[in-house]
Length: 607
Image (cartoon, rainbow, N blue to C red; front, top):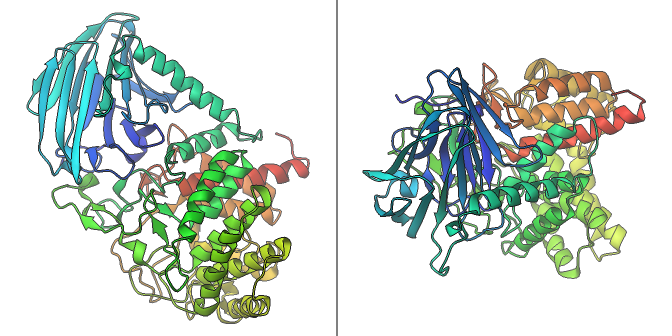
């Protein structure tokens, strides 16, 4: 099997249309073009031999490597240091050139004299399509191939001579101290007669413009608390996952990265989940990013205009709002460290997950309160949606974790149905909207009594994962966060203690344990979920245990990768697993940081 870098050894760059993952060896091992959910052109991350990559690396033996962002930007530097010299590769994607999606790479020798090697080896359509390569000049190469349902043409320009090697472009060059060479890979836009990259000063001008773009964006962040650097990095990561074209935010930019090495829990997260909406709106508005919150809310409300005839909503959509996300496997790809199958698309779009209605209504309520009041048409759609919830909240479903082992009456789904109706009632009262209030009040109160009656295990003194179960679920940590239960309610405190015994390992939290007859329909074990760890911190903060909350929060910050990024999970050796980086984790970090910082300051804690 080919060698794979740890998932956490990557940095991310992007242009608000797509994202590239850059390894500490100077290799871009993942990039989909022209959009987040387009077929990949580089996917060595899920198949080191057949996936394709774009590598620039100094020929230094045993060089130490270091990777960092230019402060307050998404411009990435990869540095190589050994006795013979210091070399550096800088990577970025200008956010202003939407059509070409330029990927700009600069190799530089800082000290000494260093020989570099460049290899650009794209593999079109997830490595399924062949392509042609044309050398237009010593400094320009065209790659042409099929990608999805159309053709894709990529142009590679450089400041040093290139040659062809099969379907790849190669270059070897030596740079003395302070000398540099640059490469620009771009999508050829048929309607453009000229490209900005043709200009000699384009790389340096684009570098300055990109740095200025990100720093201007970060300057709008209103958070000035104790963990500003980590919150800024989380905000920058979220912005990279935000579609400038549509306003939607993808769950993660990758597909097929395993939750368990060698296992089959390998999903495609390049889509937008309704579930993330309230957390996203809450996080963006708390940080002062009202434009992003408004764009995402507009996208969410557009989905509410596409309700099914019965008033129901899908759990997830394409970034452009498309409904069908057909799942398929890519059997020709090995998978990260042999983790098969590699999946694209996501069959979960057809799942029934009742919790999404609560998250949606929470986001609508928050946006109406802190953003802009919703209008008549939006309210009309909301009434249809809430009527559907009132009629269907008792159904079993697949739940927040999208299990594939059969439907259950999940605690979290039941709680979020309560949230959906509760927020609709609050909104109707606040705005004097017409609504069938008696029916909504009865449904809300019935759900509340049902949770305390059927999901409370008096023997365990805890709210259980689903009706009839004895197992626990980390999703219960959201109960006080959505104000279903007081964070100091005795029943909640005893539930939290039970979760600590069953699911918490130091500051790390498992989402559930497959035991006592519960099956999620999947094979293999999984790691701890980083977003659950931040939920746990916020629960501790809200119940007033500030010292413990701060201790575990700062321990969790230590599990970030070298750049402050998180994947979905942490494995047995605390290695990052799952799709990377994950938006939900960074949203949970922001929420925990905001709440804990505010409470520490109110309590008079120093520093």
